[in-house]
Image (tube, rainbow, N blue to C red; front, side):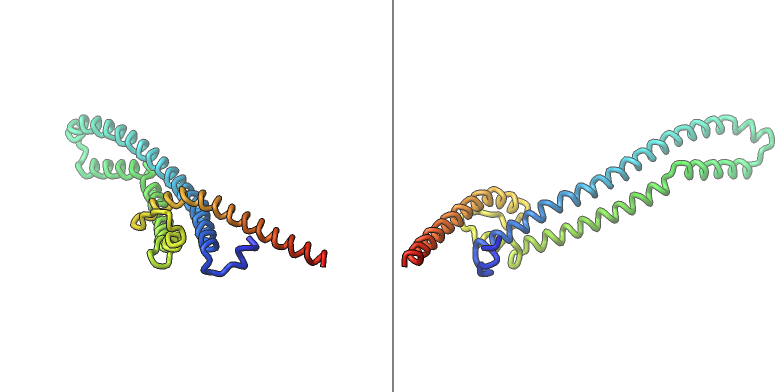
Length: 199
């Protein structure tokens, strides 16, 4: 790392190393953020499904009660119950059943999590757009410095996958070059030291 600080900003090895660091940052943070949002969405979805199942059961029970009530309705009307009283009781029953289902609270929770997921998607989209910019992003810098690698610049995801396949070989090649360079510098310094001690 100390060697990288001394390199020219246009040095190919430094640019490849910076691109690798940026890729590692995206690879580490993006899946965790997506996984966290997915878990939250799954929890909201599970609670929504549970609420819908309860609502379905309540609706089925209410339907049976309503059919039973409708079957008795002609007798009750004949007994002197006014239509206004019946409508008021049905309306009150519907209102109570609706509040028992918990659907309003579930709808609010889904809206909050959908908003959060939408925000995370926009942030991820902005990060990926900056990363894959064809003029200033990491993709063209890596592509210029790694001539042997063929990349699909129109699809950032395919490019990252192809880049990961070639980065391992380039890393070993860079390590080999640095080791050879270090060996050469060591030999030169050893010869210079031997001359200095001998002279």
